[in-house]
Each structure stands twice: as structure tokens, then as C-alpha cells.
Length: 152
Image (cartoon, rainbow, N blue to C red; front, side, top):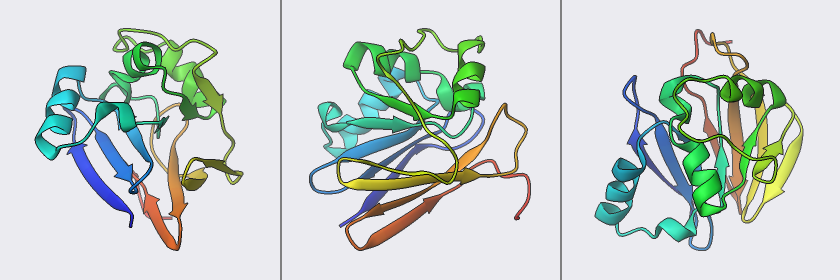
């Protein structure tokens, strides 16, 4: 089974949780750590079950706490080189990602992490680089797009 929870969607912060019975990942981490931990507690989830993070683009409301999660909790962060470069220059990230936590991905190239097979693809938006994700777990496929300027 594949499940999805939105922990925030909007200009005050975006963060989404996709999980199976044995694995999970976050898509964007634009909410504060305390808010995220509160959501995990309220849903009865375990914070240590987050194994990977995907980033869609470098706007503040999508990356606020990604450095903290990556560094303090040892979680790999997947993003394109262009998005990562934008994140390095963002005023809102309280902690920077080390090279050990950063995993570079390319659009239209499929990769696997845990239970998930993932392909990122171009979406129209005004960030440094912008991607959506097609994520497969077992026989289920989930497509995720956010902040798209128009339907292509």
C-alpha cells in the first residue's frame, strides 16, 4: 500500500510524506522542524522512518528545514544540481547540506531508493530549476507536481 499525507501546502510551508509499510520519504521540507515533529506525533508516525528527501525547487517555502533534517538526522537529499545551487544561496535555510547528504539527480533519469523507483521531470515554475516526481512502489504509481505555472 502507498500512502500520502500533506503536512503543509502553501506560502507558509510545503511538506509531503509518502510511505509504504516499510519505507518512507519526504517531498520538500518547507515547514519548521517543530511543526513537522508535531505532525508526525499527531499521525502516530516515527520520525526515524524518514529515509530520503526529494526537493522540487529552491523556493523558501519548500526548503526551510531541509538542511537541518539532512544534517542532524543523516537523511540523504535528492535534487538536481541546479536546485542544489539555488538552495546554497537561499536566505531561509538555517543549515547547509554537506556533500555527504546531497544526492544529485537528472531529469528523466530513473533511480531507486528503498521501496521507491523515482523519475523527476520538468515542470513550469519560476524557481532556479523545477521538477515533479513520478514515484512507483510495488504496483502503485504516484505523480507529484507543485507550484506549476501552467499545464504542459
